Image (cartoon, rainbow, N blue to C red; front, side, top):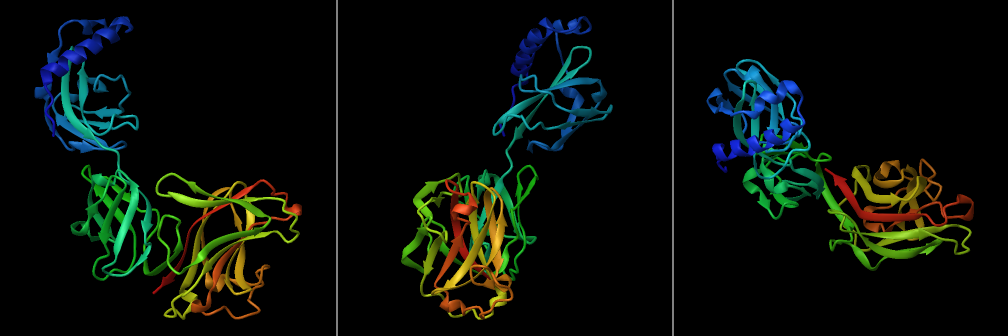
Length: 373
């Protein structure tokens, strides 16, 4: 940790005080005379590394005489409570981050004490890949400030020894012995805890396509729009949604509407219990719509009509919730297909003239199946 030069710091604060005095009320003008070093009033600080929202406890003597707290020389309000022996400050959301800053305590009767703190931005996990895994599998976390991670636990099991920090946005860990799924939690040097956006699953994840270079079981013609869906374009989004595909609902004189078809081939024959399988897709809409989300075996389809919101939707559709046909007849009139016989995933937004959706757009990303053990 960097060491703060107290004398230099006091000069900075004197300069700040001089500027503050110009606009102060009359009762505060006593501050323009010499300042007394009060660092001997401070005996301990419970955190040298902290993050916005944390409460830092300072112990000492005469701390109830503090009337203002500054970060560096910024006149940012810092909430605090004080007794003669303890002062607690709450680190503001607007605090400077990443470097050692000076916390300055202004005492009545011309006193100043200064404390060095490092304020960090807590790590945030955006995505977990894969979200279904087994013991020994490598798990990638995507987010921000991940390089500040000190301890990582999966379902309260410490996996920090397997942690590899690839960048501030990506790190990997290995699923521990006895892995049974559960939440991922990161503890930082400040003691703050950040958790994953969803719990991990004990099972298998089969990526059909995430458009970032990871594909399994995808045929050469990996995606096709037809009917009243047009203007296919690959787009780049904010990390970690690096790439996705967007389609425009357009009047191509097709009375039945339009589909997105994602073709698959060579699906594994090891998964026979369809009650444990779910289809997962990220779908973005420019307005709220009811969308048919389906699996296909040749010309036969099974799925469900889902009411989706404007913006990104994370669709999770268990196979045992699927009906048959485009109208999602439930229970299905035809038995669900064997997993190995699935030939594709089909997405059908309301794209007829009567739907009044011409000009609206639908985007797709992260098409996958999750098989729960």
